Length: 141
Image 1 (cartoon, helix red, strand yellow):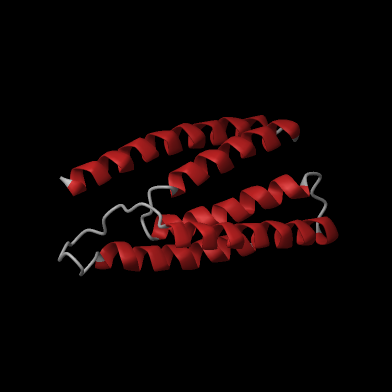
Image 2 (cartoon, rainbow, N blue to C red):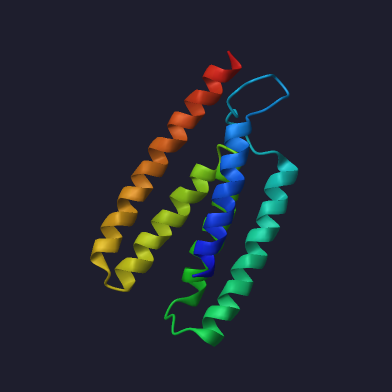
């Protein structure tokens, strides 16, 4: 449930940035960007901290039979959604990984309709990556 609260807040944050665009180049549209090294390192540290923290919560306060996997996908989703709000290309790579891991987790849990859904999400993320990568190329021209 707490993830849904995060998604609500980050959606408002993302909507603000996407609607505002960027004033650096007088563009009305927020451009797709590549992640900077310092941002990638910071997000990796945040991801690891979230992964460990969520794992501890899942082990001690839930009946999750795969707390490390569930925490991995939750932490990855949190980081990827923030990156989406900032329109960073590499968020699609994180979604591809998170969605593919989710397919495995839901197979393990015998949740076949959800396996199908996350398989579709994985394919959408692959297409999204290439579409946004093309947008960066078109923007640079």
